[in-house]
Length: 278
Image (cartoon, rainbow, N blue to C red):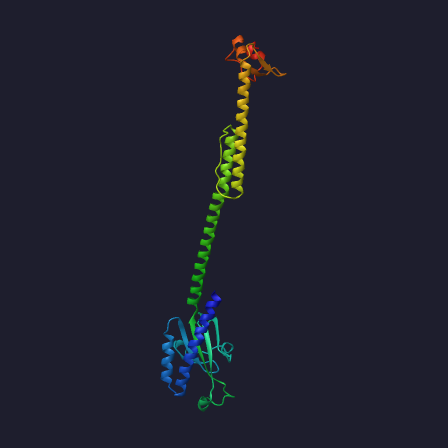
């Protein structure tokens, strides 16, 4: 972006220099030195322009909008180009500028004063120094704005990503985990509600089917045990069913009444502990 900005400013500088060069050439042809000074001084007063100079072919400043630049000897390497040049540099005062250099070529109508074009191809050099700090500052400010916008986009993406993960992944997983914990502790009516059509929603539906099937199986087992208990309670004789380790598996009502231990007999206890208190 900074390079593009610099190129645009350089092109604008070349356009201004072309207009200025036409005005200066016209003043030179008329030998209007006062008019030439006026043009240079007025241009030097424009915003973002540090100095406007006209140098002779060997680089000595003959006209300048900045009085201290009068008579200054410029580096031949900087002004030896035969074509217009625009580049960033530090001027003779150590200030960073965007320097635009336009050679004023000799023309047939100028040969009366400046000699032949073969011996004197360039009559002078037009130099305009633009303030580079404004270009750098604008590029820096734009860069900071772009960086700030980029950082804001990153933050928004992070927050949005966290919300998405929390809403559509972590929360359903927490719901399934809590439901599994409740189911493991005997709450067989536990169900989950995970709307959507993704894998977690399918997992929630599978969990509900499993919980429903488990609840139905437990209910059927309880009904079967109640039916069996009713049958053995109908037997007039005392009856108890024990396994090989003397654990009571089933006890009817008559046996409880006969032993007088109705409140002490518990399925799963040792028969001799409940009856004989051993």
